[in-house]
Image (cartoon, rainbow, N blue to C red; front, side, top):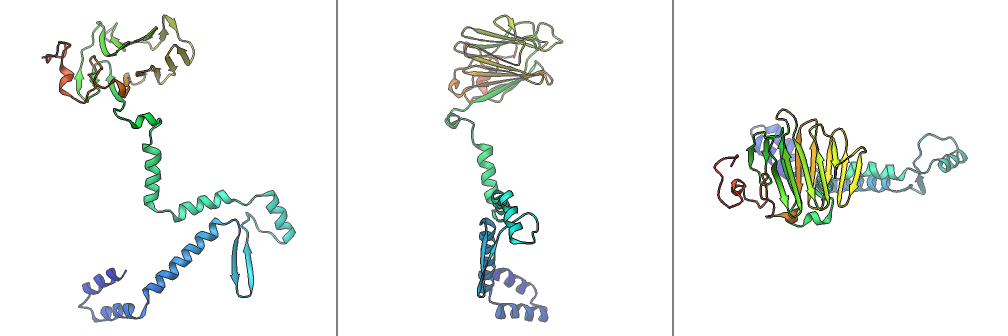
Length: 280
């Protein structure tokens, strides 16, 4: 405050009346006492709001204030009202939090709940990575390479890791792609009409578990969860999302890339040479 007043004072040196007024403020007002009284007032309000019942000493008597929700006319009526309506301590605490917490504290709490992972193991690198196929032709690899794949009735290997493999094909070029996820003992097929079969049996319910594979099906999303891979199909947007575990780092094969942090080798063939075209 002193610094700001000094800045104002320097800016209005040409105005004698303003200069005299600022000098009077600096010389006659005791800023330390003003700040101290202001802080005491704020702290007193904080304490009174947080207590169940506030106690104040006024002269030669003690005053007890109990918060209630409606006016009362007598002590018996007040006691009866309080017995039926417990003192709103949580409400007072919430109001206290909103009125006295700093903005930086709000940001800290928001960051904690927003950035905290769902599982402790998600804190350990390498982290899970997601690739996408949009409209059956636009591909975003795990390492961020954007590719355009022509629609083809041939089976295209999107991703493979150990016993897991994800294959995409277009039985009809104008329809949505068919996606097949294979793992140990389980084969899940998501057809172009978004019907789902597990080991040849059509899924009729919204949830199903087969071995280590779990499946959820709604009109907006089809989700298949396996130990190393999560496949999501969004029928309305014609989007396929593939999320692989961080433990597959550097060991994924397929058109969605190797997931090793290197964008250049997403064009590599199985022999290690760089492909000159996407078809190759």
